[in-house]
Amino acid sequence: MADPLRAATRSTYVVFAACGFLLAGWVARIPQLRDHLQLQPTQLGWVLLGAAGGSLVSRPLSGPILARFGQRRTVSAAGALAGAGLVVTGLGDVAGLGVLVAGLLAIGFTVSVWDVAMNVQGAEVERRLGRSIMPRFHAAFAAGTVVSAALAAALIALHVPVAAHLTGVALLVLVAVPVAARDYLPESHEPGREHAGPAATGRRSALRAWREPRTVLIGLFVLAFAFGEGAAGDWIGVALIDGHGAAAAIGSLGYAVHLAATTAVRWFGAGLLDRYGRVAVLRALGIVTIAGLLLFIFGPNLTAALTGALLWGVGTAFGYPVGMSAGADDPRHAAARVTVVSTLGKLASFAGPPLIGMIGEHVTVLRALLVVAALQGVAVLIAGVTRPLRPAEPAHAPRGAEVSVGPEAGSPRS
Image 1 (tube, rainbow, N blue to C red):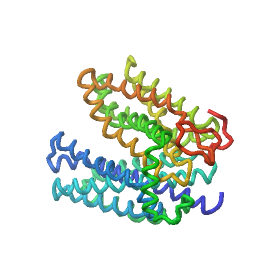
Image 2: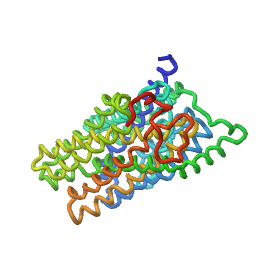
Image 3: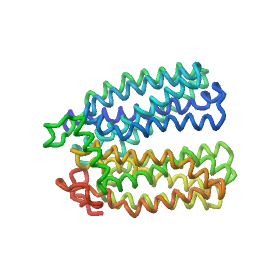
Image 4: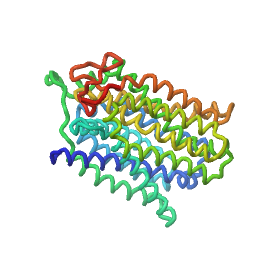
């Protein structure tokens, strides 16, 4: 592996981990923010939805922003602005609700662009390496969240103020991200567009991507898997406590088991994609997800339910990262297509909590999780859209060929 590629791989790990580190910093402090600002559950819900709203608004703009400024500058600026948003969020702990919401909106808006840019760079590194590595980048993101959550727990025990904690996290990110992004690989540009301004080209490319059946179907595939991941974070603890009679500590353990399984598969299982191809692996993992959910929902005891949570985590591990790789198969249109895919995937964070909650009021939260299993069934059926494109193949057809421009070249047909 050439030195520039090795450096770009390291920098991509750092940028993914830094993103997880920043996000988990403020999430870990939600209980203190709630208590200090005396927020009722409904108020807190609206505050958190506002943060997600900033993310959803900016995500469709990510393609044109990348086309205008490039991945290196976009990631560096997004990291800096997200860090500034984190500082404002911390100040909201003492300055009031308006400041808190402003900080969270800034984080949501900038991290969304950061997410698209780092996934496009990750796909470029993966393509140059000639092997699947995107799941490992997402494992680095998860590792960043774990380290940040552990740090938060220690600082809370030491009674460190929220503002001081979040300012420290922001400073680390402000240093790490621009330094790491210096080693990014130069990006590929669409030929034949040199006469047009990059912003205009980015807007046209983004609009075209929304009309491509393959790209939209990949987005729906990612939505199904993102819905499964999000439902785990939102509802595993509640379902274990209310549905299986578990103690509160076991509810937390259930999500920890799920998250550990997801992270382990992303780190150690990426070679399966090169050996068996995207489609076969994704379909198999979709079936594992469904089996895990059914065991979690209908298991006769806590041991069975925790085993189900583990299988649920194993099964959802590759959906989001491989969906990003599939969207970025053609480097000329990677930014626009990843924007579409990630925007559709982000809808899961809006649809998931209220949908499961509304159904759960009628049939219990545990049974409401059958919706997640049903969506995984849809994902299994449409997984064929993730087959890598041929070098000159457009994304207008829902199904591509297995001959790849990316890391699966030469792999068995799924």
